[in-house]
Length: 308
Image (cartoon, rainbow, N blue to C red; front, side, top):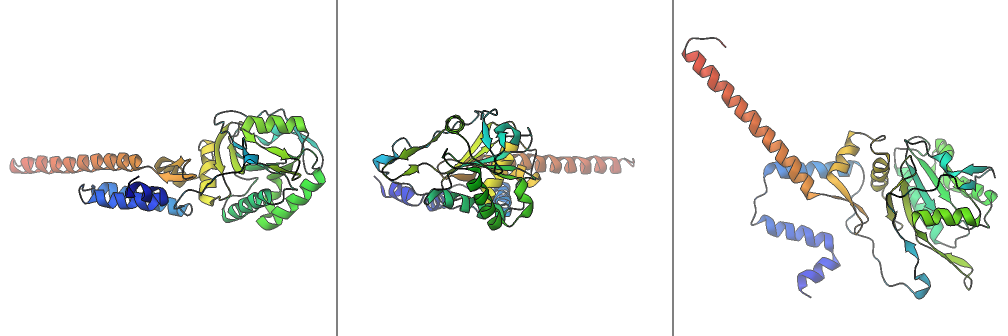
C-alpha cells in the first residue's frame, strides 16, 4: 500500500484537500467556479457545521452478527399498524402522516442500559439547536421495540426528553409509542431494523439510526450512528418533504450537497459547482456580447446621424 493510500484512509478529508491543492498547481480553476464553491460552503455553514470525517467503525463481537440496518429507501411503512400512545390509547401509525410534513422515526427501548438513551439524548440536543419544532414542520415518532414496555413508561420518557428539549410546543409533535410483538416486528422489518434479544445479558443488541419518512410513509433517508448535526437533520427533513418545508437556502443546499453514506453526512458536489459556474459564465458572456452589440449599433447609427 502506498503512502498516499495510507494517508487517505487515515484522514480522507485532509488527503482530498491536499490532493486538490496539488492539482491546482497544474490546473487553473475559473474564478466563477471558485466563487460558486465558496457560495455553496457559505450555504452549508448557514445551515450548520460541516463534519470533517466519517464516524469511526471497527470489528464487532459475534453477538452482533446480523445486527444493523438494511436500508430500504423507497419502501413504505405499513400505516395500518396499531400501537399505544403515551396515554394508552390505540393509534394507527398512519395517523401521524398527513401526506405533506415529513416524519422522523427512532426505534428505541426505554430500559436500554445505554445506547437508546444516548441516541435520544443526542437527538434532543440536535432538535434543541434547530429553529424548527416537532409538531410544526415535522413529526417525531419514538417507537419502543420491547413489547413488555408500557405506555406509562413511554409517558415518563416523553416528559424527560421534552424537558431537555425545552420547546413546549413540541409536546404535540413528539410521540412515544409502545406495541405488541406483531406490530413491532412488522415495523422493524419494514424499515430494515435488525435487532436481537440476548438472554444471557437480559438486553437487546441493536443498531442506532434516525429514519426519515415522507408524508406518505415512504422511507427517504437513514442517518446511522449517534452523531446528528442540526444541518443534516434539517436537510434530511427537507429531502423527505420534497420541498414542501424549508426555504430557498434549503433548496440551494440540497442542489449543491448530496448525502454520502461513507461520511454519514451531506457533502458538497464538485459537479454541481462546475454546472452552476458554467451556467453563470455563459450568462456573463452573453451579457457582455449583448452590451458590445448595443454599443456597436449605437456607434454606427451615431455615425450616420440616426437616432436609435
